[in-house]
Amino acid sequence: MVWQVEPVSPNHGKPVVIGRFESTAWLGDVMVWISGEAELDTVRTTDGWIVSKHYDLAQSDDLDIVLDELVALLSEGSIPSAAVTAWSSRT
Image (cartoon, rainbow, N blue to C red; front, top):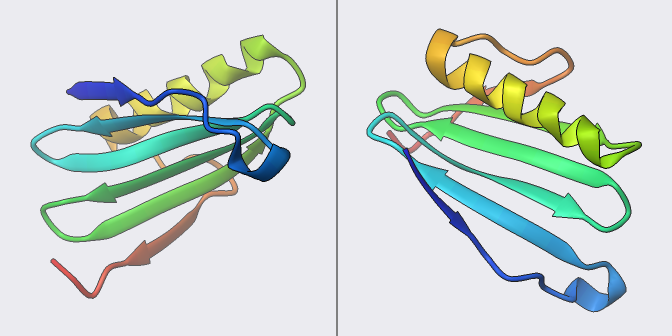
């Protein structure tokens, strides 16, 4: 898997950091705002399966939850609780 972290973007007064990743089977990103909100967005390239989840992080250690759920999704296909799933019309 290859990760690319983009510089902090001011995003109209609500700074955000984006980490994009890509592997042979998955594409996605994790966005974290200064407000503590985070978004996990992924798509499985083999069939267009989309998994997205919103997080409200109370402390920096809560980012571990996002990353643990991402690892479980990518390695086991485990859908994070409260995630939204869909199928892309583009496969």
